[in-house]
Length: 51
Length: 467
Image (cartoon, rainbow over all chains, first blue to last red; front, side, top):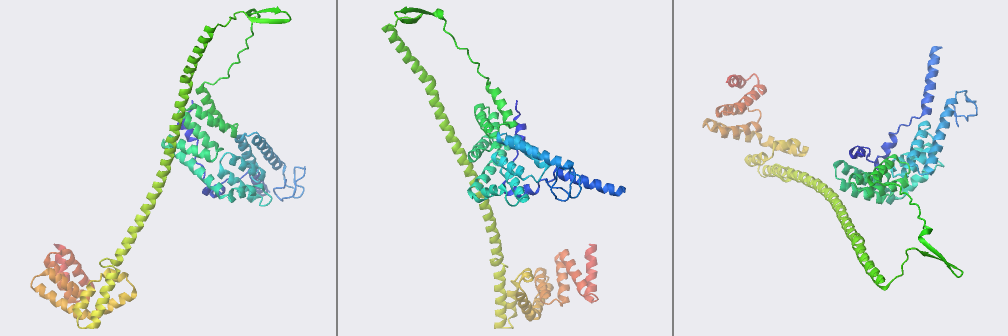
């Protein structure tokens, strides 16, 4: 049985055209490739410190 | 595929042949991104838009620079009526690859057509308004708004789903089912749509109809015989038709026809009339809704105009009112005119100068202030002594109110007249106004220290403070 109130909470207001700029700027642009490159760089720094 | 470290083209090796960086994991991530993109494309091709969004988002999480995935994701969002999300993806894609990018065409298509942009904006606003009505519990108004949304954009999946939810809440299962079927045509594998559909089906108790096995006529129910070369098959219970039977059947047929008309056609007509009435009610409700919004905007406009008018009236009052700019200018000009006509007529000049509010002088222009001070200085000594004499006469006659008025003026016109200030303070004291008496004695003590008046003033001051 569907709970109307609970279902209603799942619907959210759409962003308006004027808010598109904010939506673009607020996007999290970090991907797995970035994470990998950061990890490799950190590892290099640690290795250099060890030497 | 390019090396993340130096940007050189990568080969089949797990290291960059140019800089030697380890690229094995990096290549796997890029391959996974491509895999998700292909999956997204496959899903989009079969209209599994929700699935396509999931896959394409995964692809972008792996590789944010995947331009094709962003373009396709934008298209999928656009198809589902999520315009801002679509625009965002295309704009980012355009930034990643400024030339030879299909996102450019999509953005031009959106931006070149102002009416399309207006429709998109209206659709979003109406959807948000409908959602707001839902939160407020005005479900009828929400349904009206959502119908407008889906008429503006028939592919607005969320709008249709919300409409279906409202129908489900109102137990209008058929209407809800229609909306959900339309949703399923746009996005075949949307879990929300499927869940609501299941709810509708269970409420309507829809089951697959069982196919009835075709009946075979038993050979035993017929009689077969041969006449010449023909084989005649005659039903066992066949009777010969009689005229009376025919008439009876016709009467029965007419009766059944009338009954059918009453049972089927009449309710259909009533239902059609009701539908028409409902449509009119909805139309009126929409008109009322539009009118309400117009009234609200006009009221806001009226309020802002009213506040502007009040502000302007206040400003005007500062110019035209008593003590206002124009009145003060007039008084100063009259004072100047009176002085130029007869410099000895100091009383007239003083009367005009007294009409000018001292607070206004402080905030007025420099020229105004200079002329005012010059006139006051010209007549100050004469007028001050005149006021002083009148004040002292009133003081001696114990008419302290008049004494206060005149001595105040005397000290205003000649602020070196310590005698006037002392007698002003005395007048206040004798009139029983302790506060002003103390204030004036204090002024005297502060302004004219080391004088006999200051000593006397201090002793009165001590007495008043002790009291």
